[in-house]
Image 1: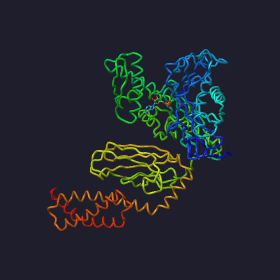
Image 2: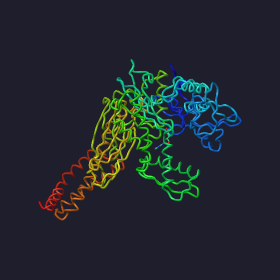
Image 3: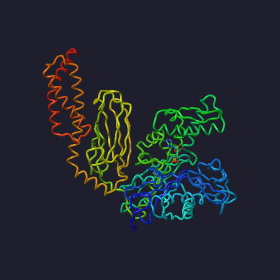
Image 4: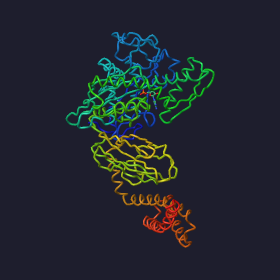
Length: 626
Ligand code: AMP
């Protein structure tokens, strides 16, 4: 049993004295994560955690530089910089002779005929390179957690053979880390999503498209007695892919497209390098927008090059098609069909491409899991497995019911709850909303979790915009918002405007960062504040409805003023001005408004305004010739 100690590092949560971290030792980038009581987090760096480029520079004096600094000077010091050493791990020199590694340190035959590199006349094994990266990750973890780190769960591709797995263990040993488990990357990605906690067997497809490699893995989760022990109950059925296929190929295709289409470009190394960098920038920007223009420092001067989503999709097509062929192979090798796949998980930076998501969705006939950052999901899952090995919790939060209500923010800052606390999982809810302003062409959906009545007192899970609504008067568009919490507690929220058919969606894992204590605290606070919260919610609703009423009454009055008796107009305008005053006060300080008085004032305005509405309707009917 480990004891929790207050830590002296960056983290504010208690950390065991001998923690086990999770490490994603990647071909291009590596990460280290830890599973806190509130859930897993990538350690180091800013909010998202540190991504360490798997690049090591071996200097002549025997010292090393690891990560971003080594990558930055890679071209200038190509003879002493090693990148993508993972491709050589546990392989013979003969096997790897033709490998592209993205480095120019010569490949040599190391001990027992294994692949190694020559740097400054010294033989450096891929394990030594990996050990440098692991040491850096260990340093990051220790600084963040504030305790020594000696044990780790390390991930490897599902297709790694025994020699490659052993080489990974050896690298850990060189870095003074005990690899308590070697876990398959797709298994880790599944664990990050909490997959594996269901009582029944499930079949998962993990589609991993990075910068330079692609693989797809079909796994079965076999529930074991006692609810499973993490990665032990995952069985890899098949894996297929291509170790030289990824986002880099798309960058090259985009650069070639510009070279062919733009006049006056000089086809030389400098221009090609500039276009490649611009291609990646444009490709990434197109995840957020429909078209982009970027600058490339080409031979002869800076050039602006443009790309739009349709062109990107077209250029990505051959790459996507190759991955789909691998998916078909993986299914055939596993002797299964898409109908038998229960879930699809996306891993790797290139799965942010909309063309990839669309193709995966179409191929597997279901929405893939995308809620977690595809660059971090493997490290997060490795740390979940580490927590299981440490004998801590089996899960982040028991997910047989929804621990806190889920809803969206409505106009004025209140929350509309769609799925109530303690609803059994899976759960689904649909509700209709509309716009609050005339001609509004977008609606922001703010997804919230909590028991209080105001958005500001709830946990924000994420926001997205539903764009492209045709301009209509306030209250006319019908926005259908659907919530679906699946078996693993993953929440998918989608919004659809019924007339135009425009749609937008988001996926989140509401249980992340949530502990049982926090759930208790939130529940207690909601009880303590119940009365005040309800009153505030009521005042907000009164204000929102009154503002719409005032607008409609004002419009009707402008049309038929001449047909109404002046005394009636004076009384009506008096009632309008009272309600308007209350709305203004409610907007600046809702707590200063008496809800009952507001309710009575609104009611009285409703009654008084009947005549103006009736007169306006009668006039419209006459105008329509009835
Ligand atoms: P990984 O090897 O998993 O770190 O993935 C890196 C690859 O993901 C690179 O080719 C990046 O250009 C690509 N990538 C990162 N973000 C995006 C994005 N938003 N859209 C398309 N590709 C991306």
